[in-house]
Amino acid sequence: MNYKDYYAVLGVPKGAPEKDIKSAYRRLARKWHPDANPGNAKAAEEKFKEISEAYEVLGDGDKRRKYDALGSDWQQAARQAEQQRRYRTQQGATQFDFNFGPNAGTGASGFSDFFDMFFSGVGRRGPAGPTPAATRGQDMETTIELSLHDIFEGGKKSISLQLEDSCPRCRGTGTENGRLCAACHGTGHTLTSKKFEVSIPRGIGDGQRIRLTGQGGAGTGGAPNGDLFLIVKTSEDARYKRKGDDLYVDLPVDLYDLVLGAEVHVPTMGGNVTMTIPEGTQNNRLLRLSGKGMPHVKGGGSGDQYVRLIGQLPQNLTDKERKLFRDLKNLRNGKK
Ligand SMILES: [Zn+2]
Image (cartoon, rainbow, N blue to C red):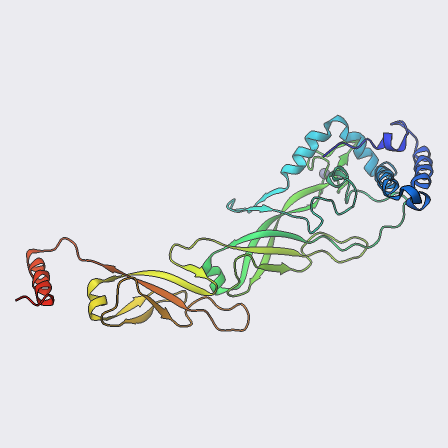
């Protein structure tokens, strides 16, 4: 990000009165208007944008005061503002990186990133500027970490997120008595913790989004707020692995249950169920429990649960057991 010398852009001294700034802007805007430069439209448009950006700041009392206050401290202020863009949940476990919609990086204003960092959303346009159009607030997105159980159960869950809000101390202007606001470092925004009741669709998949309508950035001029999108990240589960809507679990079973067959209890997301192991089942075999997987997020029904049987061999045999196994082996091999 580079510092913008708006006074130099308009060719006026730092203490220039408002009317000089206005007339400089008008003269330059006429000169560099793309319509007036058909042979050089691209360069003229860049120049015109630069002039507009400078006037957007210097032509507005609040913004100009803030710009003057930034002065040589602007880099430190920018660093502090940047740090505010890292967010954590109150539990401190998950990091939230906000991305302010599809225009992130380029700046929703269409001006420089210097302008976006300090002046977008600050103050009001001067009376000479055109009336700002009603603009829908920006969409925001963040990740939300959910356990497999949260997703299986679905329904309402209360979460808190740290969100950017207009700074209450300077009322979003970024300055206080001609100096940078100490609370927001001149950005005009602060973080506030906000609680949301989130409706979790049963079975929602990793990477899918939950929309909170109207909880994104504030709209201006009576336009609606943007939306907040929560991107689901499923936390690792010690027992279950999810593939699509199917679940996989490992189940340790006795050698005898594999050899002779058995009824065993198997954990599923919906509670324990009884499963039949057929006689002579091979080790590591996958058995399917139909409909015991994750709910399909659309269309009803559920995936399946696959149970991998992990045979446990007896250890620390007693003399008697050892003899019986040997007898069994001999019997199998046709010896007496
Ligand atoms: Zn402030």
